[in-house]
Image 1 (spheres, rainbow, N blue to C red):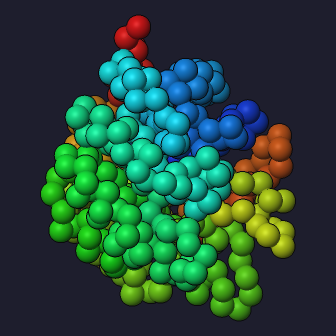
Image 2 (cartoon, rainbow, N blue to C red):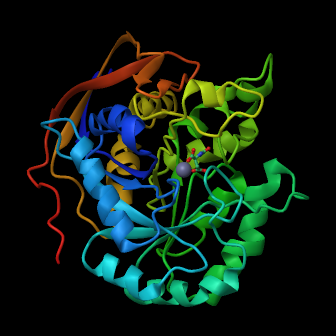
Length: 359
Ligand code: NCD
Ligand code: ZN
């Protein structure tokens, strides 16, 4: 029986760190396991310009625990006013690694997102020309479309037409939750990737709604039926390089989650790697863990895999804190609903340090 595993240090290709007191409290949870992360730009106000991204990156570096080596890979929030020159400059100096598309109104802090896709076509063409990936929140916002169907509708009505209109555009379909999403991504070429979260590998919609409403399982895109979770597990454990980990760890204080209209987001930074290792082991697929959490993501983004490694050990069920404290209130840690046996037992740091950005 395998009871220790050594894998390249993982990266998180979709992470919300927020700002201020929450940033300070959640960042140590991520840097324990992950060497790099794609940092979501949906702050209030959003990270729109290269200057915004540089300032946010500095705040993240300043909030790091003392001996942590962690590289925040910054993204810009695509608006209908995004300046393509600014975006290209930020990408060329190594500051910005992707641009995030939020359909306006789709999720937390998405009000400045895109309403009319024709207005961002010029930016998308510049991105295609320089190979800068577009990360998409893949849900339509039409109130007439059922919330459980919004991802599939997005593929048909937005994503596929956009990719056809913009040859060469590299796109990541973020936090895939449906069989349709998996089928679409896996049948495309190497300019298409997809992230899968730990929580969507662990729960289906019954966890949110059966036997009482559980706000800490509510996130967007909302978890779907069990058959969709099975499709996500099959993709994540398949070794297909289209698919890689993006936790979408999205901290909201308990006060904001536990109310009549609670915020969307699951906070998984603390235990995502344990949850995924457990799911992979149940599938008999631990040998595929490293490719999903540590290798496919860098390959898609054209970056080297981390030089450092982590060790995971299997033992008696591990417990994680129920919540972490922040100066703005507590944040509940995701509960997968099954015991976790794999936990971090060692780490050898990357010898590489944070990238020096060109002027
Ligand atoms: C995210 C957040 O809270 O910022 N929430 C979520 O449910 N995933 C936004 C997002 O990625 O949709
Ligand atoms: Zn997200």
